[in-house]
Image (tube, rainbow, N blue to C red; front, side, top):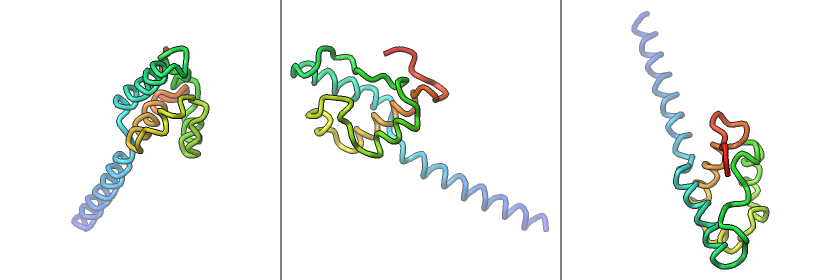
Length: 114
């Protein structure tokens, strides 16, 4: 009886740890996302499309649900710099999303400054 309980507990642990790892792989790299996000606006500023190389939208300007909805719709018009956003690959967009999502206004670690 104890052996069955132990085997069942080990199996459940294995299943839940495997599921946790698979969800972790879907996230991007928030450090790369912050770098890429700033790099987009620096390139946009150098092209003359915006007045400042500082991104106009801070991660704390939206909640996690709002960031999720924005990136689900793939409508990046409110960011401006359409040309630079079109040039980003999926990994870079995922990294930017992770950065913005992880530092949203309702996250455990919201961004404190722009």
